[in-house]
Image 1: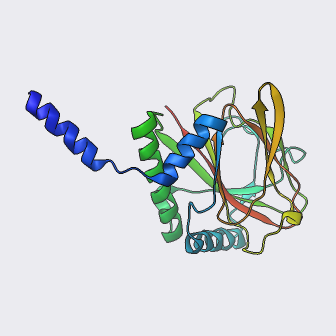
Image 2: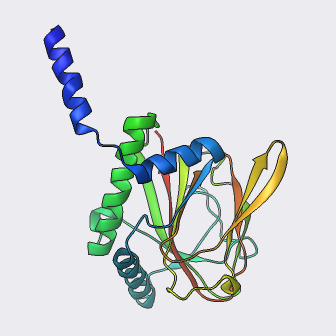
Image 3: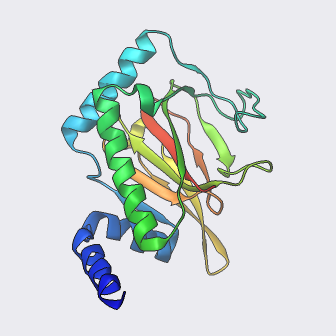
Length: 219
C-alpha cells in the first residue's frame, strides 16, 4: 500500500508542469486581486475570435445586454449599452474551440494548484457601440454568488488608441483608500479579477469596442 501511494505521488509530480503565465495570474490575484496578461492569446487567435464576433454580429444574432443574471435580468440602457451573444462551448467554431481549450487549461491549473473548485464557466461576446458604457457594478448577484473570477479578453483592432475610450476601471482598495485603476482595451489584452470583491465600470466608448467577457464559477 505504501509503495502504491509513493508511486501515485511520483506520477502526480511528473504530470504537473509549472506554467509561468498561469503562475503570474495566480500571484497577481493573491497580491492585488486582479491580473493583466498581454499575451494570453496569440495575434492569430485574437484575429480569428474578432472575425467570429463580427460575422455573428452581421448575422444579427446579438441581443441587448441586461443587468442581473439569466433568472432575474432587466435591460436598463442607462446602466449598460452593450450587445452580447452567449458562446455555447458544445457548438463552438474553430476559433471558439481554441479559446475554450486555453480557458479549460487555465481552470484545470487553478483547481490543481489553488483548489478554487471552479466547476462551471460562462462566456459571451460583447460589442459596445459608440457612446455606450457600463456603469460601476459588481459581478455577483443576491440570488447567485457562484462567480469567482471575472475574465475579459479584448478583440479590438490592432490600431486601437486610448482616445477611443472604453477603458475598464477597477476600483481597488489600497490600505482603506479607494484607488481607480484604468485599463485600456488593447487587442489581445486579458484582464482577470475577483468577481465578488472588485467593483468596476466601462467608460463611454468613442469607437466600437469588442471583447469576450465571462466568469469562472464554483458550485
